[in-house]
Image 1 (cartoon, each protein chain N blue to C red):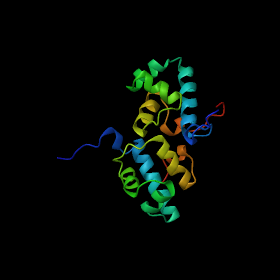
Image 2 (image 1 turned 30 degrees about the vertical axis):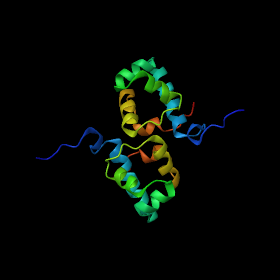
Image 3 (image 1 turned 45 degrees about the vertical axis):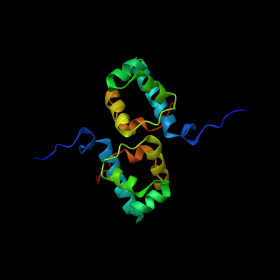
Length: 83
Length: 83
């Protein structure tokens, strides 16, 4: 029995867009999840959960991740062409 | 003694940008906070707290608000020229 993705986890969802952007931006910088977590003052497993779309991240933490990646919070929620 | 705004409440913060956009988009539609809350399936006081920047809203709720306003989650976090 395949579990249908919950609305939050569907491919167009904000969680999915954020996860795609975090992975892409991290890869562009050659950063591990641990490195991103360290830069943002968060825990590695927290970043891992956000990238697996199983964490309902808060706005303040979106802002922390955006600052450490040098992008705007809006950019983290904008579907990237590649995505 | 004036309390300096916490980083999250400073004028450029994501909370501030979101609050400004919610107020503007609500006004454009002639919606009360109660109307927006009803459309998004949230409580009126929750919307009031987000607009006063005293609530660290989650991504799923940002997405709910965006959908009910007919804009993207990224648009809610994009500083508007007027803002």
